[in-house]
Length: 535
Ligand code: HEM
Image (cartoon, rainbow, N blue to C red; front, side, top):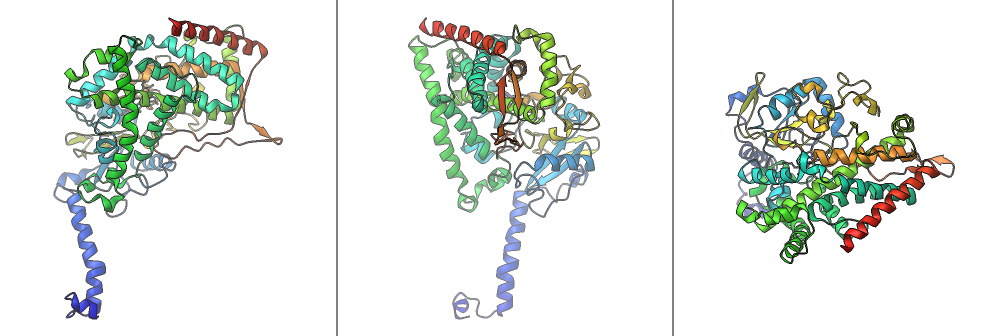
């Protein structure tokens, strides 16, 4: 008691001091913080018309259901809510409104038709402002700078331009087949090498001949950092952006952490960019997208050196792990469903046979898992109304692809690996992104609206070429150890993206004839690279 009286509390009974100190003060501070962090919660009567949704906890809303979880549980949760609350439902995380679009029609009506106000990104003080120094296209809010960088990615990735990359994809795919014949256990890394090599070849003119190449490793390190700090709930400040103005020490020193990430990542992208600059100036640069980009004078377009480096690097990262994760996911499903591979082989054998290998002329449509565990965050830049429901300005709007892609009303047995469900979807994937009737769209894994994946043409070509060739040339089954088949599992790597955890799988070339043809086509292609490099 003596200590309390010295502090001026002497005249209050102990229970009042404890009640005040332990309950009233913290609750008042929390409420004050809440109203400061979530403006308009009480004032705006339109909020009575928010879409329906789960109640969530006071202050934090559905934080633990979504952001605070391990990510693997999110798909089931958002599917359950779509069933309960319908096509457009609402959740709250901290001070942010989340609107989930769970039908093709809602995605079309809002993200496509009203794209003028549904194309921003929510604030991400750590992931974008500090760790990416505001320069990453993927997280950039809509505005003049965003429009400039989007134009640049379009110049690299539009459909006409991407046909020029087909020889690169063909070459890298031949190496992938050869690597699978000779070192099948390392299939996971062969897929990563393939993806890194394609995108680094077309952006910077750098081939990645082995997965041990330090450049490939460093790019994947950047992607790995990003997918960890961008994971939902990984950092409180990206979930409750208003706390960015409070001392960081209360929130895990997020700013210092973000700076550390930037200090690690930016030299990798800057080195690539600066080396290219020197090569262009010295007349030794290979023909590649970044050479054209540098010669177009990014500064004149308002882009500083760091932005130019992040622009090129961002394309590399967007094109690498996404593609390798899709290829590894295919192998994971194939290991778990050998009967599907058998059926596909019958089909490929009928069309291609063992005397030749699948080429661009044999192309078809392919299935895919959504690329991240939540949905890509769009943000609204104006208040809006949809079917009588209020969507406040600044809402985070997500495609609930875990529901739409697996909706039992649209697809029979949606959780079974049945690539044949897409038979009859004969248009190129990119055409489905803009199709007039949203129910005709095959899947939503490339996003929608003005932010839709600009890499779709490159990605689809890579998936087609490699999956058809793997099915053509290889048997895939569970690995047998001590006479027992190993379960490959289907868990994902922790973090934001849906990357399958490394798993066991037995891949073997189907016949000596296939092996011989693979060796022949790779050796011919390899010789050509050597000749090109000598030139
Ligand atoms: C299987 C492979 C891929 C999948 C599933 C995928 C999916 C996606 C998705 C869902 C988005 C966000 C769309 C939205 O916000 O609505 C996105 C953005 C993006 N993707 Fe892809 N992607 C893949 C491959 C690629 C490739 C190969 C490249 C480049 C060569 C690429 C470049 C980009 C870029 C630059 C963005 C940022 C777009 C923006 O915010 O303006 N992607 N991708």
